[in-house]
Image: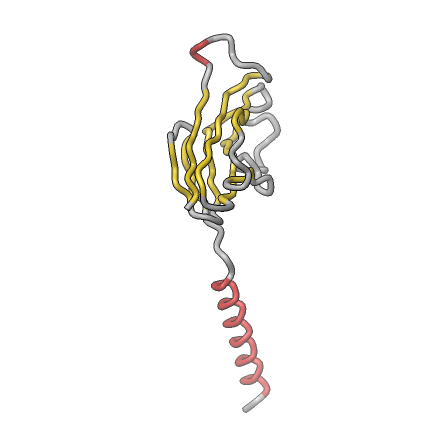
Length: 137
């Protein structure tokens, strides 16, 4: 077998190994729900994304966690950004979501409340909150 043929064979084998190892890598799945969802079931090990739509933190929009979930069952995932793109210009509106990791089987709740510049809006029409029951199986 010639040198060129061996080189091509070696490159093909290396490409196959890279492809197979990528296929065997753990796939991180995400269950996405809107913040108005009442309840959801998430498999152990998966990520739950609670989506709040478009907000603009530069003008004072924010969503606070008012009731933390049982950390044994569901933990806040601080490794991932809460907004859709880090390429957004400063001050631009962006999609916002809290992400949680389903750690072990059980049921817990998490509560959220909209704040404007750190305060609950005085106008009742601008107030918003939610409470979600999460079952991890």
